[in-house]
Length: 334
Image (cartoon, rainbow, N blue to C red):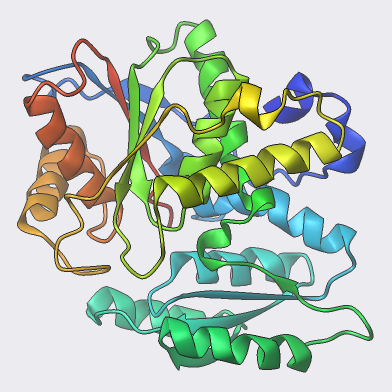
């Protein structure tokens, strides 16, 4: 299926390659057992996006990142994540299918049974693992990792945490255009807000830009779940503008940043992080149990349960009235 981004801007088809790794559009439905107070709550379930047991926002980003790496004739991807990184595992597994080796710098996070199992999966994925422990040590190690994986004169394809580069953010520009098509088709009402986790920035920045391109007035609420990265409105605006510039450079007739203002529709909230990245909160645990019991929706404690906790609390306090509010589930591995 032709990506919505290529349908909107046909001039991009030759200059911005895409690999179809998932099934679109992802399903939408009302979560009516959760919206007894406040606005209607709807779900767009990106956990259903992707093949081979995978889904979520990682695969949407890789649909644009992998072909970009191949276009540049790179043979290795160098990126970073926590010890339990879903991003790193998805990159290693999907990259391997296209002949790309993945090198991971791993930063410490609280260890539990999930993280220990994830580390075993990472070791079995074929990725080259480097335990850099902290953000500072990762930055200091980056030149060495890049030099170590030169292929002739070509450097490796270097990506930030979560694949949140301008190319990676295209995954959620695409998702916003997909959502606009579902609204036009009558599959769900136009939401006043979309709530989703804010872990590395690419999902939220791409959504905000994509909604502006789709001419939807919907606001994006990014729930900060990561205190190891700078995730402010200004940093997200810079990423969204770099993504818009990429589209212009590849041939899309976008208005100027001043006219577009790609994050005028973005709110960043920080009240549901708790003790820090990867650390559970009582509110997230309650949200996780509620969604599983009442809606058969599986969330995880690091990202998606905290975002759902934020949505339920904000909705109970009338933040989204009259609504409806859309929850974007980015939980991927199954």
